[in-house]
Image (cartoon, rainbow, N blue to C red; front, side):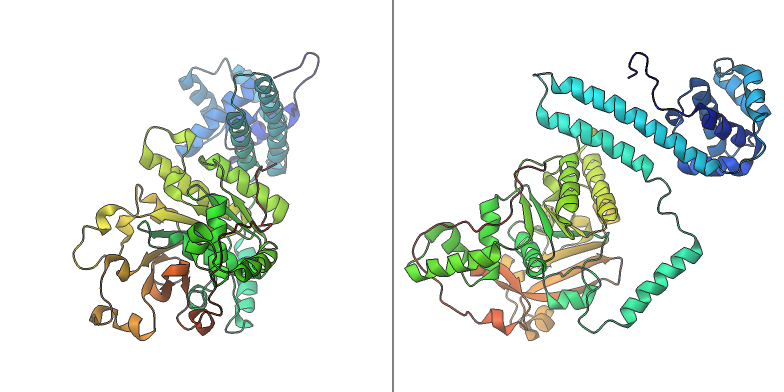
Length: 482
């Protein structure tokens, strides 16, 4: 939106240099296409039309020069609107080569982003004064516009030469070579056996943790959250199912010897255990856990919150509970397409923030209809095959006891029983290694999983029952992302 007497940000001379270079040098076409993805980036209408013709020819693998582009514009019925042959000849006469074309393209792209930012800001400003506009829709519109612009600025930023890639690989191998047996290359999974298997969840990974309702998805991921928080690693948790108090009660049950029923329903019978809860609260209240249990039901809200936490608190891990409750207003109409879009954007978010993103997911009811074995399969992921495609790790939780299946006398579970476990953590997909299974033990009254070899957790330290009382530790809660 142009203000009277003020020209929008632009670089007409550089636009001419870019178009001219593309017409005289095929190398210039390759370099320009790598930076400028849309003809809208150009300010001058004639330049937009010429670039669009070149772009179509480029993807049709046609030769590009002044004559072929003129012919293409004629076929499009746009030659005169683009300035005619004289305009094309005049541009090429100003250019000797495609030298510095990438640098020129980035300046033109910056000018475009400034123009779009000004237009978006004016639109948001106008809507902000409209009493009928929902404030959350307003935030989504602004966030989506900024996301689009940010994607344009990221174009080509991660392109590496083979030499540069080899340097990064050598550094990683060197770190691994000097690592001790217990060294993690990623964030703590919460369990020693799974750490040994994965080396920790890696930056940029999208981890799908899937199971049937009630199998323990939230309990397992909260153990991951707690173990990272104990080490001072900041974690963001977006919950679309449980309230903050429900999550906090489970965190306390996982990190203490209190039973979840005491914290949610029955309370305590002895006053001294209330004092213990207050003591635990002082410790747990210092954990760098950031919880949003609001209405972030659209993927744009999730992205906005995650970016805010990364900027303000430098979170190293993000958890989303759970996938099927997240929508995408830009893909309304087909739920499978919507879920596909959500999973793809979550993978891009993990790469952008360079942190693991753990997403809980439901499994279809097909698991329940099987015969004796209820082990989940990748085909059981609900609503979209793209979940499997986008994920770096797909973990399933399988507790035979959930289905009243006896394991002690069953040959199928012999290995699990010998290890003192009752739960399979199935790695149905793992880009960093092969598929496989790890074993954990489920402690039902505390709703938590533990490593079977963790004898400290196997033996209760206190019989912590006391009277009904309520306390809320000073854990960080983001009531607003601003």
